[in-house]
Length: 210
Image (cartoon, rainbow, N blue to C red; front, side, top):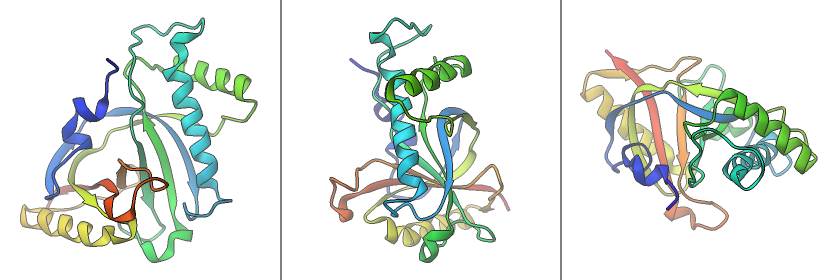
């Protein structure tokens, strides 16, 4: 049976609907950076999705070709994740999505080294006849965060985030946004196939002791 990160690491992908603290270890990702409203059909975000999933599935299906990755195991492609920020804003301002700066990413299995990642970029470029140079191999060391499962439309996330901030404050923690620690979302539903009120999104904010 294929390894499923969501099932094996439920503390990261299927958390409680109540805010709680969690320390997230370093993980490797295929990532694409961009700017603008993710809902713009002609924007950078849609192009980023094609690059991310093109590479993710090139790696996942590599065992069917002649290239062999040391330590390879069959797995379910992990969910899409996003780091979001706006200049001059702690967290996010949903009223001005056009000012978003984001990093969209998909977790990579542990056997994917930087060398194997570079192979996948070349392989995808050759087979799919498109430019994959926007993709980068990224290690994200998230550290201590307040986390919560949000259920509902993306635009109602602020209420869940307020609950998370209140919980963190009660525990003696304050937000710790930096260039390397940002508002983080993990998408467990496909908005094209799931009713907005049923969407599940893991939310994380970095924190530190007050």
